[in-house]
Image (cartoon, rainbow, N blue to C red; front, side, top):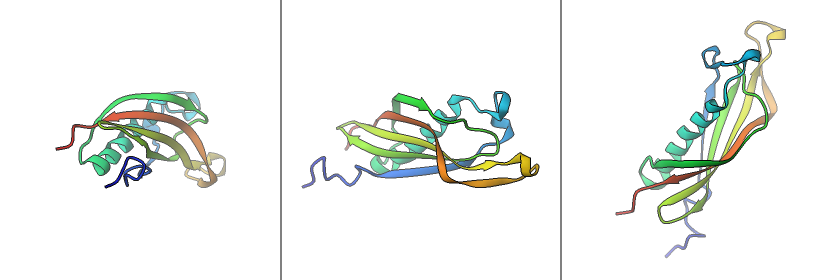
Length: 134
């Protein structure tokens, strides 16, 4: 029998990547709003709970949302969600949004480059509630 510390779902992680288009821009400097990252986190958490619990779950809330760097048009971003705590009907999930590639318009209209290392743009923690097993 496995206890909560040996549950294979603990530490499970998923990642979603997406391109940030000009249609996503809300502010000067080609910046997107903070809700952009939260929407990406929501998608990653949904896939994670499908994989851990066979259900999309319900996002109960975010904690410790921190904006570390801008997200801009032309970026390729990755949203990572990792289960850090399992309770009977809830999961705590660590979230990271990293910029993997960035446009370099000074080199040309369509120029871009991978960032090494990627830039961590947003971090947060989420709680998601899942239905009872059975």
